Amino acid sequence: MAAPTLMQCLLAISLLSCAAHAQLSTTFYASSCPNLQSIVRSAMTQAVNNEPRMGASLLRLFFHDCFVQGCDGSILLDAGGEKSAGPNANSVRGFEVIDTIKKNVEAACPGVVSCADILALAARDGTNLLGGPSWNVPLGRRDSTTASASLANQNLPPPTASLGTLISLFGRQGLSARDMTALSGAHTIGQARCTTFRARIYGGDTDIDASFAALRQGTCPRSGGDGNLAPIDVQTPARFDNAYYQNLLQQKGLFHSDQELFNGGSQDALVRQYSSSPSQFSSDFVAAMIKMGNIGAGNAGEIRRNCRVVNS
Image (cartoon, rainbow, N blue to C red; front, side, top):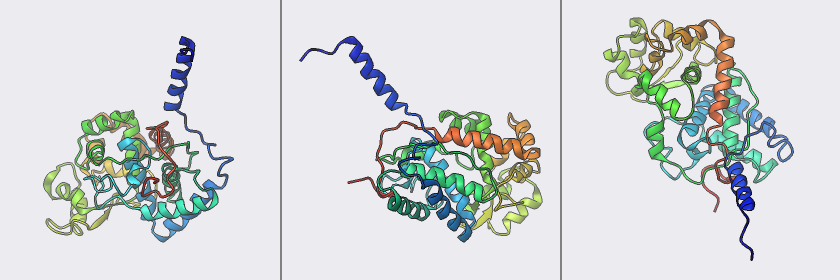
């Protein structure tokens, strides 16, 4: 057999490069699973109607997936320890909703749609069903065959993070400080466990409104009650809007990391802008979600039949 020519070698390298940097497409399943969007929307509507918090939970689940190995559904795997890593233990939720959606999708078009793409669509629909924007989700992700507890511990920002740490951790994922501030607006929905904000409301921070701290102390004691829940947004906890930023102006950010966005630093002006312009926040949030959703695009993987386990 003749040795390959230089041109053939270069062509092979080029093809491999293209495969490794595959682009996502909003029409990826247009022919292979044309009812995908309506299947996901129907299940998400039922889930959010049953429990409004679920919209926030699935948005967070997508974020926690993308920051570990890219948006590859690794957080959905029972094995590998990612689900029980520090930032995820006893906090990430919504797996049963993804299971239900996956079952419905498999019934319509078996072996076609990745769990990673289902999670991306569910995050979008959860946001929209709670009053937030909608957008065309680029699709075509593959499901990872591995999960990583260590990367979850390294990459996911803790509620105690400083502004510098937040900018650094988001930057590690190719996201700008503006992207970070817009994506933080996801905290306009959802609930937080007492253990994540206890230190802030009991004197750990000085940049906190006293009446707000007292309000949160009512359900979060100095000791015990670690799992007691409080809304992250004190104004409209179950509606996706720009109230989160208005809260920051009044020193009513629930997490230390929230208030860091408005504490005399580089993001103050943007927080003010978002607090007074819902349309600007919405536009930047959508752009940042699409950008975040592209992390890991082109990763090798599979289409899992069951989102919790790799194919055998």
